[in-house]
Length: 253
Image (tube, rainbow, N blue to C red; front, side, top):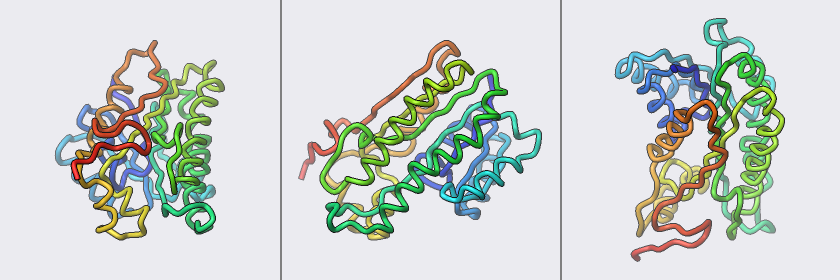
């Protein structure tokens, strides 16, 4: 069954890869993000390659008013949302807490936790009208473990883990499935953002082993989406073969 899928943070990384993968399977997609030019470009490329319906909804998940305005302004023929993929998220900095920057903390908490809350609450009424309501939260291996310098980022992803469990309980009576994907190290813009644009420092994170890529996580999302209606994939943790946990890696150099 073809679905209407809303994906946050679709301008790069996991979100962009998920948008392309979902469109390739014929689903209609609503792509959101802060960078409208990237959304426009992605929409154009998908419509050319897959002839799928794409609607762009530019907003910052941290802005509660903007979230509510954007979601409520959806045209009627785009309000039949079946799936919400809460992908928008980021890490900022990797300092011990005593040396941490409060601006970094606020950005992570506002995006990873509050942004997820704002979008989910706004979309739930549409999911309740669907016969196949499904929420997929993109968490992290850091949502069940911690590592040095990961303090606030790990805390934010622990919150995503807890919220996923809470939503599964609260939406049970509405037959809305709630799943979570918890990736390990993946080579996207993640580390460039974490290190405030320092591409050289970011590249060192992935040196000496083969990291996950965005398309790996998109395939996991499709596996979850394509599960039978009576099956809910609650939680999937996926890491590179070279990664045992949040802090132990087998690097070749």
